[in-house]
Image 1 (tube, rainbow over the protein chains, first blue to last red):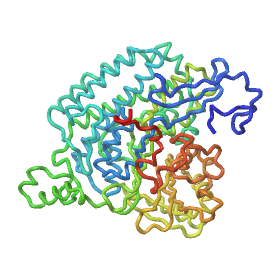
Image 2: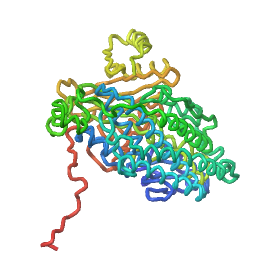
Image 3: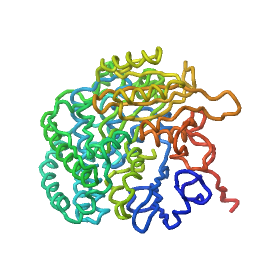
Image 4: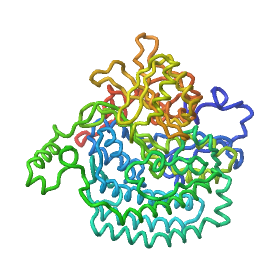
Length: 411
Length: 174
C-alpha cells in the first residue's frame, strides 16, 4: 500500500478522518527536484501553503552497499564508502577503516593518526561549506553558495595533490593510508589556513545578520533536545538542539585528544541554529588543522610489517625477507590478512553526525556483514515533525539544514 | 578504547533481574545476548538506566557462518548521552518452523525510541523480520512491490532478475 496512491476514503491508518480532509492538497516534492539535494521524495499534504503533514519516501538511490560489503575485501570496500556521503568522501574512508582497524585490533602509528585527523577535519570543512552553501542557495543566496564552492575547489586541489583524486579519494588503507603527506601538500594546507578565515568572515557577513535569511530560518524546523536524542540525531543537527555530544570529545579516536578545540552547540534547534553551529564548527576545524599541521610526528605512516596488513615500502620489499613475504601475502588474492571471528561497532564524528560501521568478521578477507549506520537516515525520519505547520518555502530551508545526502541515506 | 568498567556494574544490575544473560566483551565493547521473550523488557529497562539514544537496529544473517546456532541475530546498539557508555544488545531468532508464519517476529521498540521506527522498517525490508507493535511496518529502501528480502544470505548479489524484465533485442533480431 503506497502512501500517495491509496484512496483516502477507503484505506485505514494514520491519515485521520478522511472526509474532513478533502480540502487538503497533496503535493509531490521530488524525487527529481533541484532543491531535494539528490533523489528523495516528500509527499506533502498542504492546506493552502501550510504543510499539514509530510510523508518522506526514500530508496531511489539504493545500491546495495551493505550487500557489496560482504563480497569486497576491506581495502576494496573503501571505494564504495567514498560514494556514501560523497560531499566528504575522506570522512567516510576514515570512518570505514577506523571500524576495520577496531575489529582487527590494529593500533595505528602516531603519524597516521595525525594525518588522518588533519584530512578528516578538512573534509568536515568541505562538507559544512556545501551544506551551508546549499541552505544559502535554496533560500536564494547565490553569492554565498559560490563563495563556499570556490573554497571547496581549493580543498579539492589539496586532496588531488595528496592522493590524485579530487572527489572519490579512497585514501585510507587497513593499517595506514595510501599516500603520505608530501611537502607540497603541507604547503597547500598552510596556504588554505591563511586564506580561508577571510572568506569565512565574508560569508558570515553575507548571511548571518541578513534580515531575509534570518526571517527565513529563525524559528523554522525546531527540534527539541528530547526529540533529538530520542530520534537518534547526532552531529550538527543534534548539537543545534542542545545535545552536547561530539564523538571527538566523548569517545576520542585518532589524534583528537592531543588538540585543543571546542564543541559548538546551540539551544534553539531551528534552521538558523544549525547554520550557526556549522559555521562555528568550521572555525574549530581550522583550529585543529592549524595545531596539527605544525606537529605531525615523524616516523612510518603505515603499520609495521609484522602486522601483515599494510603494504611494506619498496625498500623493505627488496631488502628484507619479511618485506618480501609480507608483500607477497598481501598481493596474492587467496592469502591476505587474518580477520578475527567477532563483531564490533566503531563510529566517528563525520560531518553529518555519528557515522558508524558494525562489522562482523568470520576469518575471511571480506566482512561477513558490513552495516553502515547513516546519520542522514535518522535525520530524514525526523523531517515530518519539523515541518508540520510551516509553509511550503520552509520545506526547502529545513531539508537543506538537515543535510540529507541520499547516497548515505539509501546506501 | 579501553573497556569501561561502569558498564559491567550496569550489567550485573541488569542480569540480576533477567536471569543469567550471556555477556561478551570484545575490543572494549560489551555485548549482551537476551532471548526474545525478554528482549522488550530488557530494552525498556535499559532506557530507564540512562541509555537514552538508540544508535542502530540492525540484523546479521548467520546462515553461512561457521558455528552459528540460530539464523538471525538482531543487534541493538545503545548509547547514553549523559555517561557516554555504549552497550550492544543481541537477540537471536530463527525462521519460523510452522507453515502458518512466513517471517520471524520480534516485538518492536519504536514506542521506546523513536529512532527505531525507520531502523526497524529497514530490517523488515532487507531481512524479513516482522516487528510486532510497529506503527507502520512497510518497506523503506526497496520499492513497495519488491517481494524478496535482499540482505539475506540466500539472496544473490546480483538479484533474481527483478531488474531484467525488459525484452532484449539483439542485432540479428531487430
